[in-house]
Length: 159
Image (cartoon, rainbow, N blue to C red):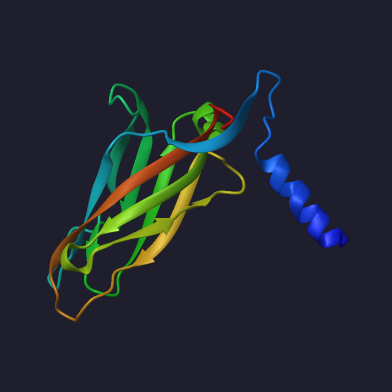
């Protein structure tokens, strides 16, 4: 049997084998760390208050404040660059959150996902600059849904 084929067969056989002594297998899964947190983004042709909008981020039960999300500025005409900053309260939260994303909902345009970048010097901080797109003079309100994830291990029986 050719070596490449042998490695493919062996790899396929091992994929179905248990990796724990009790006959189960363990895999890593992404689990939500925060609740249903959202922040509005106003696209307007007129004047708006450019003061950054800060909203609390809550745990999955909604009982514990885990950080804040800031949108700067929270409004502006098409072409405005908005900075989204997630700032977790503790280093423990920063160590647990391994992925941060925004689901941007824009009415008829649909929803798209934006990945945030973790700050290299502070694991509690995640940032992304986004630009509002559309037609000149357009007015609308989009919503950014904040999605924070941690990795957990899940144990499954081997089939």
